[in-house]
Length: 463
Image 1 (cartoon, one colour):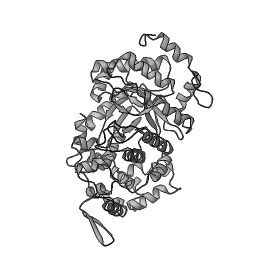
Image 2 (image 1 turned 135 degrees about the vertical axis):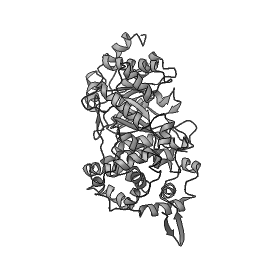
Image 3 (image 1 turned 135 degrees about the horizontal axis):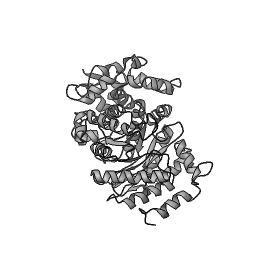
Image 4 (image 1 turned 90 degrees about the vertical axis):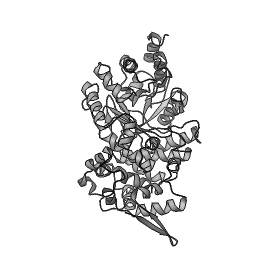
């Protein structure tokens, strides 16, 4: 079906829904690389006008990627709930934007329509929204998850303490993890990206992190971000696996590039739950996504990269995860060229994930060859706090020495806590106070005795 609109007697025609969505997308280098972006701001405006007039029901009648060839498309169709959709089914995309922004559209109403929305609907409305619009709506939508603590409560910000090491050295990992804990970082997870994907290293890393957590009685969870098949093998060996991690994308072909499909993710989910290491009914999965992942795998089928990103959230929410984060600037300037595009993408991803019921975090980051800097990250971090992001990732000095990219520092988390008044998960907040790291207002006050004692006595640290 073709779509069209007229601006000053010029008719703009878009051959199908896939083309309309791509042309309506705010400028980004990935869509230009794919050859599907609008030719300029006028064509983009025309596409956005046509998209605003499109009924939401149209997304139920025209697939971007055929279900005959793609299990993600089948999943999206199968999980759509007509009863939940009924509250907004009569609206156009533009009217849906207005409905989202209404004061009477509260958290409860947003939660009620969650399973009535498809990723394509959510991506579409984001394309005609300002940053302010998306922040305002995201701030109303809470998604709370639990393992050993409670993440996503209103007014709180959790952090992933990311103690990566170029060679997975045990002492280096522990030293880096303690560095983050001393700055109050790690209530979402203490999670290591391993340099290798060997089962032996995976078991060593999760055992190492579990020892640290157990000896200090930290109310958090740990994770080695190895491949899901490695996690399953480690679980079979009896390793202390809290969270099972996997990168996912928005098409079957792209997920095959990651070495996974829905059946394997289901197996991993069941394996993680079988250990019962968290509280009853705990969420055990951790997913990462990122705009450009499907395009870089030649698995986007002509769909714009932001819509493909939101389709990945359909995969993630199938497995009731504890954490989901978009590594927004990690893939590089070929997909998000500069700070402005990275900021826009981070706010989009968080907004779309929250509308689809996901516990969204953002890795506020960029690569050194992107036209971005730490002030862009300061801006995105502050906007995300206003939007109610569930968690962000922090590393020593904002420089990940294993993955070679720039993220947030532990000090940035302190800024959020003390200036923006975003405390961590309540259980972790209480622990920080009990060990003497923070005062009654949550401000850092000094070197806690428990951590100092562990550093002196740990054979891993060698102190």
